[in-house]
Length: 314
Image (cartoon, rainbow, N blue to C red; front, side, top):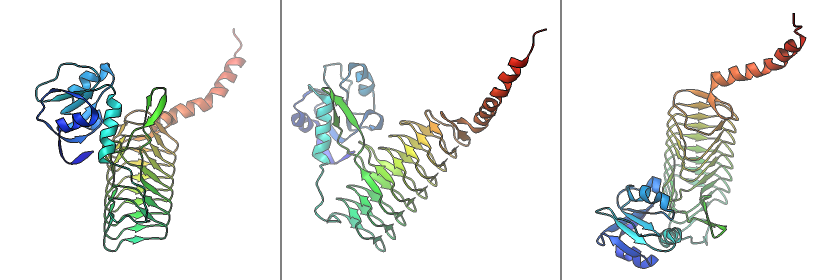
């Protein structure tokens, strides 16, 4: 998530009641989770074992709950509750304002785009040219839709990320600061849900075709010209490279990478990264030929054990 303007680190420190260690002249350009940060970003850690990773990341400003050594050119913001501080910064720049009309006054709708009855378009949404948004679809705040996009009925685009932190023995929702970006020539089937990123963006690449009743989690990045059949579910922050094919009911865990041109057959469960250019099947998904050989061997086991019982020792 990038700020609309650079913000002095002193202003951030005052907002969250933090003490600054290091460079007090820095400007914050955005705020992101550790795996999404770029120079100029704010990130945080409230566990000492992750301090080193946070400090050595691309982030320029790090919110911590203990004093430690600050590298040259960076700033540490020391406060009691880094998570709440981080979340409060996101909320101050990405507020949730309830809609009072079906289409927000701040939405931009391109020439030739058709919105069918009961379509809802949130604040600061941009929809390109010649799109067709079908009945009862909701496109929430800050989404960006390209040209020639078709979204079938009853879709939910840019919903809040399903992202919670356990804090004081209860779960608190992390405010979503990311967006959802749908590039040109994408087709999205009926009943599909695409969550916005927590701090980065959820992206669906140009030319990708998505079937009905599919779930893309927060921060998922789908490449160009991918195909997904019905009931596919992809966990948060997973990257699907270009030209990947996912057959029906494939489930993919979070934080994975599926290589370019991979094909995952129906009902497979993906629990680790998959190399591109190969076909996969099974739970957990593995090379298709290996899975088929294992299944064939399993089918022969009853006969094998029957033969063993009938062997009479000499």
